[in-house]
Length: 176
Image (cartoon, rainbow, N blue to C red; front, side, top):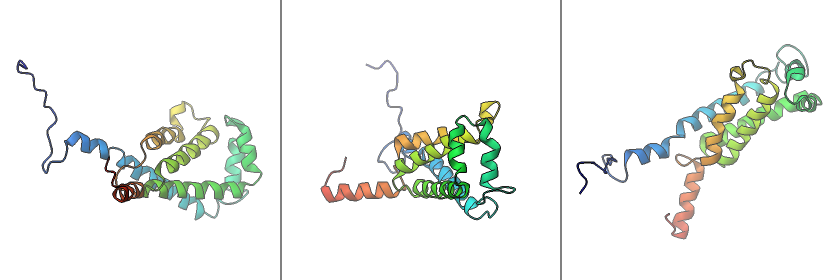
């Protein structure tokens, strides 16, 4: 006897095959994945197409930006390392953002791509936006936090990883 208390609170969606909460959970990280993927692709392309950015010095250059934040960075040694070859560092950041963005957007090696996003965001937070006061004005910290769920969960839907996983399951007959 249930004394009038309903225990069947999960209503299957039209078409069957599970309840709406299960479906929502499966797709929950998709908007975050699309946002971070598109944003990092844009950031990488923006750097690669900005002739001022990829220079040792001058207005808008990666070199001047690094010299400008050197004394306020949490780890000045990271800036010193970047300043040994500012243009090389600029290309590394740009191609890193591009690779992370593409991997995240299409869901290819999604956890690894998200880990790359964590490392890029952490590096930028500890250097470029470290001096933000209060700390939450620094734009790199929210990106760092946004990558963590994708590192943990990967890309479960609309991804190359999921397609490869499904293909392996069909081939081996394992449908867990």
